Length: 212
Image 1 (cartoon, rainbow, N blue to C red):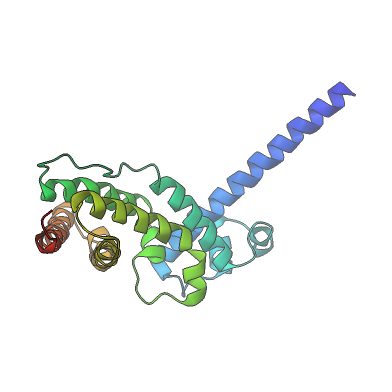
Image 2: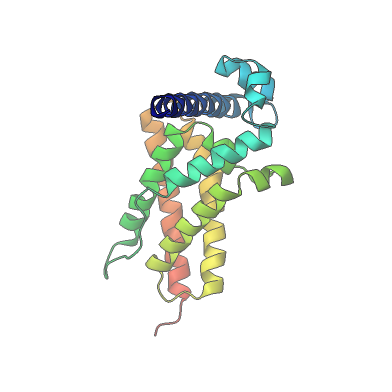
């Protein structure tokens, strides 16, 4: 009985590993498809074909495209949680340097995850898609809010919320151009322009906070 139980456990683990590998295949294929075709232009059939499986096999793991997007967003949110974030900014820290330190890993993350901008860097998101990608948006919002609070400690809750919204839209607006840049030099130039814009905006906000 013990041998049979051990064999059953080994087989179950192997099935789980195969299932995880198939899910990884599907999510990688979806990321590429979303990047190349856009969210609306991507179909589950296209994702299945790119993943090297039949649509029926894909449906064993995901019910539809929104379900795939939700799984991608949850994975992105988990990975974003491991990025270094600015929780406390030492007194006298240069704001521009702090913005650069926070922005660089976000640019790198977008470059490493081609499907990310299809789920994050757009302002005309359909309602169904907003629900699917809520985890990654919540993670990004929390990350930026923490940065704003650290850089402008006198800013009240409403101010943090407004400033966070503006910063997120600025990043969303330019990030697609940064990731699509034809050369490393062009990408670096655009990243510096985003950094400069964010720094100038945050400095203007900080200047309006009443001194304590």
